[in-house]
Amino acid sequence: MSLHAFSDTERHAVYHAIFARRDMRRFVPGTSVPPEALHRILRAAHAAPSVGLMQPWRFIRITDDEVRAGIHRLVNEERIRTAEALGSRDDEFMALKVEGILDCAELLVIALGEGREQHVFGRRTMPQMDLASAACAIQNVWLAARAEGYGVGWVSIFDPEALAQLLGMPAGAEPIAVLCLGEVPEFPARPQLEIDHWAVARPLSEFVFENGWG
Image (cartoon, rainbow, N blue to C red; front, side, top):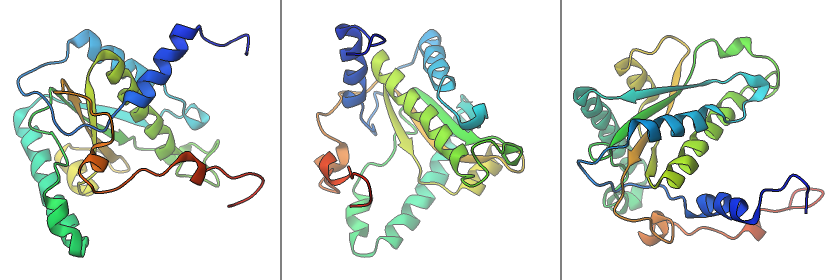
């Protein structure tokens, strides 16, 4: 074992947070997240790795009920369009609960900041690394929230331009996630989309190659 390894207890806690994390849609209405817990979660997000230390993420906390309702409206509009695009699975999709925007204690919009083109280190051939870096921050939100006992749901069903306009984002900034955060009734043992018979997670063995593709 590496000399830099965590203790058995610490290592177990890290893996427990990873495997116990779920993409949550159901929240307990009327609950709150203490400010100190929210601060710890956002600090964890801000500690995420980023290519070239560009730190492309921006966190927008939604505290105005009218703004929250506006985000919910945009998500619902896109939900209908997504159902139409799914064809024969449209009714099945509309039966799914895909967000908890109106019930969650905290609503966060994660965005990519403006001026990202100035960051060349690590992005010259792969400009999408700003998105990859921000996704690492989102994963840290998920894991830190789970360690604190709260659930997180990543909502990606929205028109980015419409959401950017609603939130007054500058040109070049781009919303990539609406995160619902808060107290949940329970953490299911399996992903909710498996429970709802929408999809089935495939085993690791199908995704690990050696010395080439497949």
